[in-house]
Image (tube, rainbow, N blue to C red; front, top):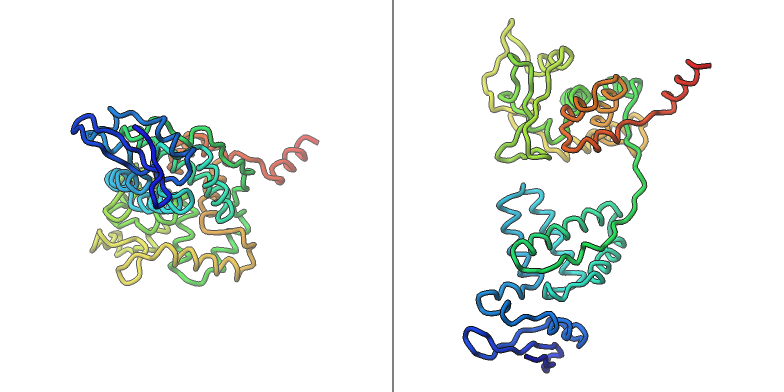
Amino acid sequence: MFISKRKNGYYYLFFQDDISGKRKMISCKSKRKSEALKFLKGYNNSQHSSKNVNFLLTVSQLQGEVMKYVTDNLRYSTTLFYKRVFNDLLRIIGDKHLKLITTKDIESYKSKRLEEVSPSTVNIDLTTIKTIFNIAIRFNLLLSNPVNHIKKIKIDEKERLAFNSEEVSILLSGIDNKDLRNIVSFALKTGCRLNEILNIQISDINFTDSTIAIKNKDDFKTKTGKVRFIPITNELKGLLVSIIGVEGNVFPFKNTDSYLFNKKGYKFNKEFISKSFKKNLRRLGFPEKYHFHCLRHTYITNLIKSGVNINYVKALAGHTDIKTTERYIHLSTDDLRRALESNL
């Protein structure tokens, strides 16, 4: 077993297959002797017989293996994210053999991506790459994970923006479009994410049990993959009645498959609603930092301020980790001022 440099400048590993007895060669995918020697050092002929050839996968070959697993087990949007991370990995570190990927390669990826995107996006990338290599280890394609010792970028905690009661009044009175105003009002009364709101169908609303089901569908998956139920309060019921309409005391549910928020039977596009809301924020004089998701922050913040048990808040918000809910426990300047004045 030895390495040799070919005319193309790349090093190749030559070995005798322990099953066929034939001499075989495989590219070390490197023009550097140090990396080729490392590949040779880590090589184990019994593990690299024709039965275990997958152990010598490159990044692009691993992409095929992992993407099949991701496609079968995760939602479509996540599949697209993994595909993007793989493409960036190939672009930055090249199509190396898995055994040649080092911690230094991952650090190079991290540095390059920091030039292109925000630190939070880089951290998400690193988490995804670590998961990719863990899948490779599970499939016996890799022995160790080169991301294990990579430190994520420290990010200062972001302010969770929420609208106060006066700002909410400005919003609801200032938005002229009835559909958008109803969607905003629904978000403030339920804390639902925009994608959840736009995928609610009439069949998801149960006035008998006073609940709305946020559940998975063929073209929509919840963020956690789980179903949750939103209680219909009197205020929310009033909003639903105004949206759906009533005939006497009967709700005209002629088509239960129709979407609660729709335009001529078609559900609204998420990007369209998000951009429309942003345009209204600008027109009403709100700072650029505000966006649609602030309505969800407002709902959760108001629950916390009202003294609702944090476990109930977690369930209503659809958080999987109580720590996510706990991040909303913050005291505003006004809260502190009132506390001081009441004790002076």
